[in-house]
Length: 330
Image 1: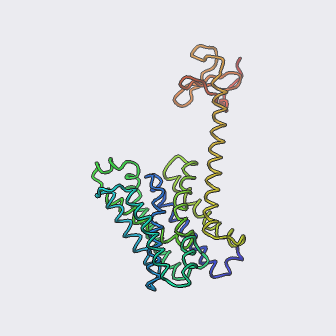
Image 2: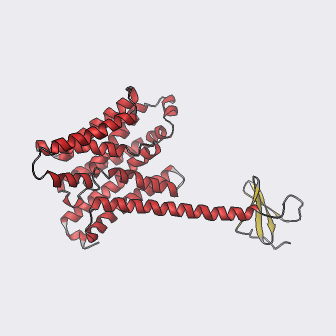
Image 3: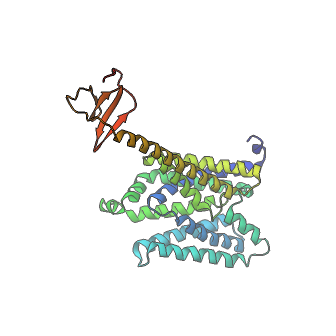
């Protein structure tokens, strides 16, 4: 790791990966809650058209991509809220229109276009310039600040949009904020994982964290942790393995999701086995049955052969830890 820090381009790459690893999951968790997992892909294709505009006109592609992605995000949200076209249709039009405009414009940009196109489509984090890092740092700070301030409103709209509207909340403004945050996150991430893969870094860490946690706050914290570890780890692995950084980062996030799914499945199987064992308890415990009653929370356990049994619904569960004052009873 220390070997990498002696190279300026790797220092910029690791800083960019850290910024994206924090910002993408923070925005992505609200997209997962609202079942808008694919909107990042749509924004990525629109941003490609913005990159093409920058290449053709000689402007900084980051700024042109940012302007076009934000404009498209606002338009999609307004069409979804006020227009007669559904949100998924509007997103599909932007999806195909963006990549088509990008391909047409880049075809007119000269012989160096293919290399530029690949770096934006699939990421080329080692080509991140000092200017890119400064721009990404400012954009990431804006994303984090706005997301943190708007967190209660974003959560309320993601949970129940109709209820939020009934309470008087300006739902359209909240949705526009989330759409703009998504567009900015896509632009920040395009050098790291590429426009075609950015949606994975916004969605997969959140999908994995929601398998392992039960609250929104803990899921958000774990998703950010997974995003940072996979982004920075992906850069390190790609350097040593000589693989594309964007694909390596996404492979790591998918691997984390697979491991989380397996762990969840294994825990469920163990709990099911314990439950099946306890469901066949041969004795019916009740007051006066001869076994010691031990109050436990909102129910009563009964001591039997050094173990505690408790009735839950139509079955009995065996609690693993005997009471401190338990004594063996027959």
